[in-house]
Amino acid sequence: MQSDDIAAELAAYPQTGRFLMGRLRHDMSADEKALLETLIEETVTLTRPTRILEKGKVYTQSTMLIDGFVLRTLDGPLQRYGVSFHVPGDFVDLHCFALRRLDHNIDTIGTVTLGLVPHDRIAFVMKEHPHLARLFWFSTLLDAAMHREWVMKLEQLTTARRIAHIFAEVWRRLEMVGLGDAGGFATPLTQAALAELSGASAVHVNRAMGELRDSGIAEMRGGRVDIADRALLEDFGRFEPDYLYGEGALSLRRDICT
Amino acid sequence: MQSDDIAAELAAYPQTGRFLMGRLRHDMSADEKALLETLIEETVTLTRPTRILEKGKVYTQSTMLIDGFVLRTLDGPLQRYGVSFHVPGDFVDLHCFALRRLDHNIDTIGTVTLGLVPHDRIAFVMKEHPHLARLFWFSTLLDAAMHREWVMKLEQLTTARRIAHIFAEVWRRLEMVGLGDAGGFATPLTQAALAELSGASAVHVNRAMGELRDSGIAEMRGGRVDIADRALLEDFGRFEPDYLYGEGALSLRRDICT
DNA sequence: TTCCCAATCCAACATTTGTCAGTAAGTATC
DNA sequence: GATACTTACTGACAAATGTTGGATTGGGAA
Image (cartoon, rainbow over all chains, first blue to last red; front, side, top):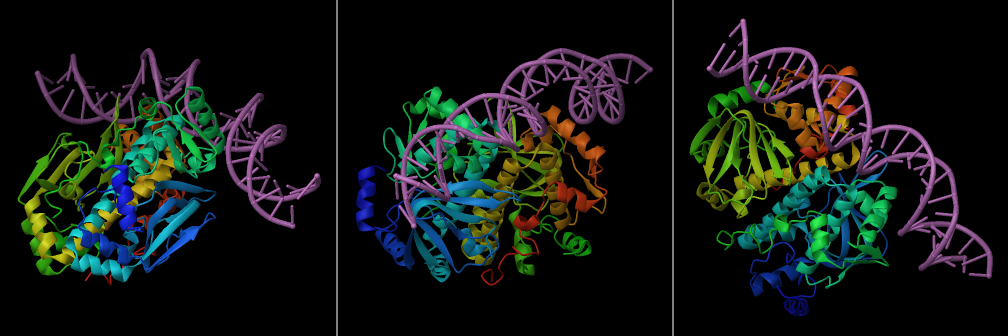
């Protein structure tokens, strides 16, 4: 999908125009897109870091990320650990519809805009719109695939390579929803947040950032990540985007999505 | 669920008696259980380590693990990495029904017995049996929750603690399906396999095993893991089984499962 | 038995990463 | 302007982990 297509989507469906685009590029009918718009009961914009969902609590609504970044986190005895992140267009916590209590937290970083979707509206979709229900299921399967990839990268990569992998994935996922640009992307990520996401100390992340900078792989400053040579970044971070189930070898099967 | 209940289940439903018991303890009707039996077209027993599913390939059937252990793995440039494991009763690769190609491999260790389920039979269940379809979805959500927990543990724990966590989780999941005993459990896991699962070198896993042994936490020998003090093991491995969505605080909501 | 192979175990040294204790620069607030 | 706060950064040392090159053990195969 080209970025001007996404711009058109956003004009027609300002809240859900990016919905699932970074995840599943199945055709949705205009009716389905219109239906998605009606799912959002309310939009909220948060400018400060906020824990919007807390492990163990019960919620009656799910969250669609319209703009900004959020982190999935789990609390350890002494600190917070980042499990994954979400970019605009992601249905962040669809599983909390099915699971009585959430098994992790959702924390915002930077400024985010959220769309709140009451669970009874999701139940309606699950019952009456099997195609959308299937897309919802796919979205959660994709989360699992991304988790698996990150488990392997944690086992395999040094801190510097982990960060390169995060940058490569963020960039790619932002591009999928019409964000990002040729030279990099804007992000509210800080070195401390990268430490939480990569399982390293903030001090070591700082060392790793210096390594990335000195070797010309990536540079983060002023809320932006600049990347001169994409191939160099993706190679260093061992980034193979199969697991994002984009257009390539692992793309989703269309035949059972109708 | 008590182990004598599970024995009765196994007598009535020899292939699927453990099905989903380690994952979701929702009531299934006798009709549903009988239906599950009919899903299995064929059972296969493998005695040697075998890659039964390979990343990137297309399959027309999914796999139910009836007996033994399998690993989800991803290949790195030089070695194999273990992402997660499965115990009897798990529907191993339900997602490969929905995703055109698998994003990872499934490898056996030890002797395993598999039930093969053609995808058209799963499609039939998805269409005609919404309650079972919901259970299938839950099962894949649970996989994602387990992945998230393991990501955090990889970020948080030393190798010795990671292994303690693996032992605690294996033990708990085996108990959920009527396997394991008061003093530990039988397993085909080796130190090399634990190295793949924990992201450490085999040499370091050996050191960690010595540490666990010397401190009286766990001992593995002769295809068995012996644990003298469960609380000690679970404490050392920071094992908090919320994420397994068993009987405790994070248990699944029953109201939307009918 | 004898051989072979997988699994376990070990010591020494190199590399990665964490911890501690700071400094420096930028930004928001008063 | 002064202050506090967040973020980025640094050096020194300690702990965890990887790598290399072995030795040992036990069970199955010939």
